[in-house]
Image (cartoon, rainbow, N blue to C red; front, side, top):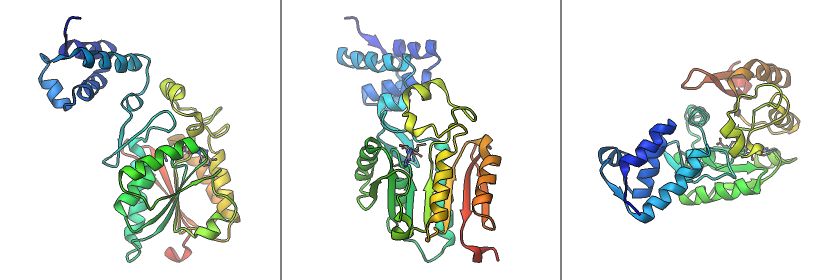
Length: 287
Ligand SMILES: C[S@@+](CC[C@H](N)C(=O)[O-])C[C@H]1O[C@@H](n2cnc3c(N)ncnc32)[C@H](O)[C@@H]1O
């Protein structure tokens, strides 16, 4: 078998318009950095390396997301294991983590808040929060036992053994009254089947449907979560959630109807899209 050069692999990436993917797969196969791959197009792959490259590249040609091909995705500066059991954590979701941390900092003395994350998936949000706030008590909820396995693996790899994982359809009855969290944080599925269907083909094909869709307008799970909070005696101090840009007006009207009189704020992500809402249940903060 003739030896295969780095340059010929990079060329396969250029032809498909997937140069970054080819560089990162080469770096993975060669156990090297992306910069070294880029700097050494004359390097050659061993036969074994070449077979591994082909196997991974075949998946890229089939439009599989790079994160699933390499089983890793960075989030909040941490490396997460991901596979098709969980949504690939998105950079814009870091805004949700940032909004929680800003509220915790503003609370001053309380660096050990109790946080419930609903729809934890890979555990990215829960692990990022526990990493920054080791004193926090974090509960990570998901309806998918498959996702919880991945989240637990990620928590363990960062020594976040204190995170409590709960398999549940949103928040079971009495959960809030028993746990009494300061924060409820959610990045629930918000793609609509009829409206607000802003999903790409490769996402639809490879990422778990359970992590993407939530009824006709994508907001069914949020409606149910808001009802659960409404009917529980205990209210968290803050409820934070991620949503799709075009959903802001609908979401705002649902939230204001359900929780009139509370302070509701919206935040834009780095690309300028409405992305996160923060509902403050502490009336004293604005009276
Ligand atoms: C959009 S993904 C978010 C994953 C992760 N938190 C993140 O930000 O990358 C939504 C997650 O909610 C979970 N989920 C869907 N329906 C749920 C339900 N009824 N109760 C709890 N979790 C649910 C899915 O399994 C999925 O892991």
